[in-house]
Image (cartoon, rainbow, N blue to C red; front, side, top):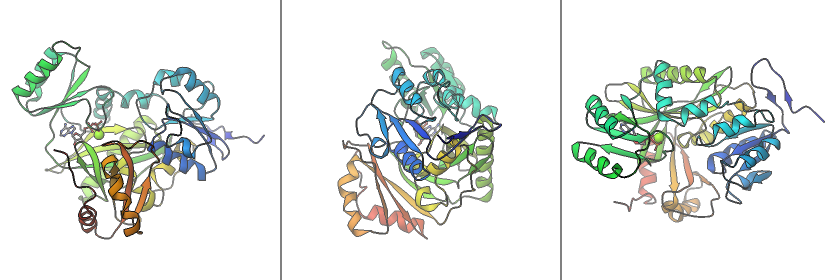
Length: 389
Ligand SMILES: Nc1ncnc2c1ncn2[C@@H]1O[C@H](COP(=O)(O)OP(=O)(O)O)[C@@H](O)[C@H]1O
Ligand SMILES: [Mg+2]
């Protein structure tokens, strides 16, 4: 039996083709990781409650159970050489419990920090990096005190479990504050954080990947959201050299702090006076990095797989500008018509059986030499016309 991994000095072993990567979470991020793992010669297992989920369609085996089912995590660990995850809300303790039988190159500190907004902001600030002004808020009295310090407008977010704007309330003035009081008078107030509202010029993100020792960054990109869900990514962002350098420098500070293995996404606000403020982190490939599949010399999923396999990482190069548009449930039928009209557009479909409003079903990437013209072309198709209020 050939050795599937080689011991190295660091905590990361070098994984060889033929080894099995177990992915917790069976959605589109896991699927694109798995496709990348496949061509590197790895085998793939997935833990997900939905049979024939997007990852299972391209994996060797599925453990069909909830993400926090400890027996299922143990089974996945026993059948894998390395564990990774496609989302941050997995049970870090359960992963620690199986570390005797499987390598977890990303560690669990990264998970514990990024699944709690207070830990995350503290980590970011401790690594010399700006966030919005923030205060931990444990109850309604704490909220009133935090508002006095931060002022209006502010954003109240739950510490754990939020995504795509869920678990958030914008507090614009005393009326909104009264609404939060009303809503939470009878219920239990979830552990939260209050942030000052950042009057940003635009939102951006940067990806960084590591193998525990060395780190490489992707270019800074611009993101446009609709209803708090990513709509478009424009690569690269049109920013000054100073902003691009600061984004790269802060990404390196954070990656070193985590001894990062795999890919980390950093969501940014670029302020009108040119400051780079970190919004939040995702310890995994990110929706705003899907453009890298066609537009970069190495993509965010390859970099994730190489990183957790302990392989050296090449510096990603942007081969040319690109625009990525998300296909949500309400866009599926109209965007399918684009397949015939635009053979030069890269159409991705995640293989999800159930179509629902706002569910991420796929994306389209367009390589271009004029990103604004391409954004106009995408919008002119009418496929993304918003029917919601
Ligand atoms: N402090 C803030 N100031 C201004 N806008 C914000 C702030 N926090 C969040 N937002 C807006 O809400 C969106 C979702 O917030 P985010 O913290 O990224 O949560 P999620 O986990 O839901 O992605 C952001 O992309 C941004 O558009
Ligand atoms: Mg976000």
